[in-house]
Every structure is written in C-alpha cells, then in structure tokens.
Amino acid sequence: MTRPADVLQQMLRSDSAKPRITTYDDTDGPTRGERIELSARVLSNWVSKAANALQDEFDVAPGSVVHLDLPPHWRTAYWALATWSVGGAVALDDTEPADLLVTTAPDAAAASDSPAVLVTLAGLARAAAVPVPSGVMDEAKELSTHGDQFAAWEEPADDDLALVHGGGRTAYAEVVVPHASAGERRHLTTTSTADFLAACLALWASDGSVVLSRGAAPADVLADRSRTEGAVGP
Image 1 (cartoon, rainbow, N blue to C red):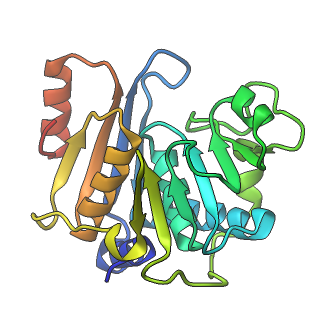
Image 2 (image 1 turned 180 degrees about the vertical axis):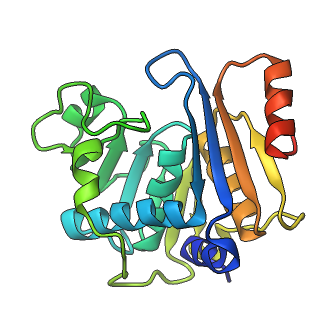
C-alpha cells in the first residue's frame, strides 16, 4: 500500500529537483499572472512546515479531521500532504465535524467552532492582506517559523480515515491510486479540489507532475502552456 507521505518520499528519491507542481494564475485578483513552480524538495519543505504546525500547534494526529476550505492551488497540495503526513483526515466539505479549519476566508475562520488557519494564496505573501481574526493562525506570517524537517509522532492504520468528500469516506489504504502512465506531466484546469488532489496523488505516485491553470484563460493560451510545459491536456 502506498500512502501520500510515501509518495512524497518517492519523488524525493527519484528526482528531488524535478518540477512536481506548476501553477499559473488567471483569476481576478492580486495573484493574477503568477507562475509558481515547486520541485519535490521545495514541496517537501512546505509540507514539513505545515505538518509541524499541525502536530505541534493543533495536535492533529490519526483520527483528527482537517477541513481544507481551499481551491485547487499549490498551497492546497502541501496542506493536504501535511495532513496525511501526521495521519489526519482531509475533509473537503463541512459535513464532517472538524478539529481544524484551513481556509482563505477570514469570516469562515472567525466563525469556526474549531481552531483555524487563514491561508493567503499569493506566492510572496509574508502576512495576510486582511485583518486576521483573534486566535486564528496567519499562515503567511507564522508558518515559516516551523521546522523544515518533520517526523510523525504516530502513523495511521490502513483503515484510518484519509479523505472525506461528497458523502464519501476513503481510508488510507485506498487514497492513492497511481496513474497508468509513468512520468506523465498533466495540465489541469479543474475547479474541484477533490479532483485536483486525486490527480496530484495519482500522477506523483507514478513519478509524474502537475501543471495547474487557475481561472479563465483562452483555449489557445492553455494549449501554448501545455506545449511550453511539455504537459498533456487540458
């Protein structure tokens, strides 16, 4: 059985410098025009910081549920991997009682019954651009203080809950389904966080990589990106 944390380690062993996720941002707002590319080494660094925060600050462990109220994005990828690295379950909707909320919405963070983390999507953000509710972690400001190396206190069991979405519950033994084509680089335009995470896990487990275009871009722009990035799709 391959777990998400195993997938990350496999990428580091295979080629730690190879691009694993590249994000183009065509959304209206401050991140428009960004292109962010993460190698396995850089992705692992972000995962370690987030996993240390989850474990040390919020006591997330096997049996805990983390609600990721985030769009398809490179930051979403490392928060999901971090949750799986500490053995928690990723919930992509609010049907499951959560021990922690990770969100881009200050109002949701302020209203949450559980502790919350406010995520700023901008690549170079060093603090949230909006007021952070009292008691909420400002990810852009505080995540960098956590360590670059991570060791889990507990490992999840095969039948522990790994993913909750749309009424479905997926155990750790089933959450990683490798892509059929080894080493494929795929261009995604999905707006579904569940589909995005599933594609990331599948492609990474097969030593592949992801190109994500967020927002609305003309078909010719997307096609040119696919050619430039050597990617299949969208």
